[in-house]
Length: 189
Image (cartoon, rainbow, N blue to C red; front, side, top):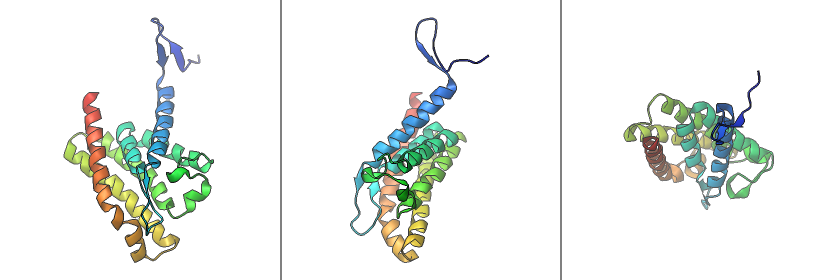
């Protein structure tokens, strides 16, 4: 017998099954990353802007878990590749996924999985561990982005100057913000 994913209960309230809720949370998560991507500050000497995407990626992984958080990031990347202007500065297209910022974008996938895994194993409950977990995820993004940037056009030293060093302070700030939001939202539930 096939069950409907959306139905109304006896009181007439909309009832949504788990699969529908998961798909909806993944889609909303991808939209959150897209919205935060538009918070973009150019770095004059770097092809990589400072964006809010990292916050969305870490929050989604920390709140949705490894699988759903990763799927939300993959949905975001797929939306951008299909031509929806979801990347920083309203960019779109598959070419962005192989351009100078591609290492950071693909790093989002691994970072969402990492923070989700750490969250599922209780390492985001306490503020200090939550910060360290968020810092590990954001640093993973920076490392992968910098390594790709080094292979893309630059040598390793130039990639560090353009793709890592300018973002370290923001990495700490974003990690603290995400840790506060993750632990705070968990307390509300």
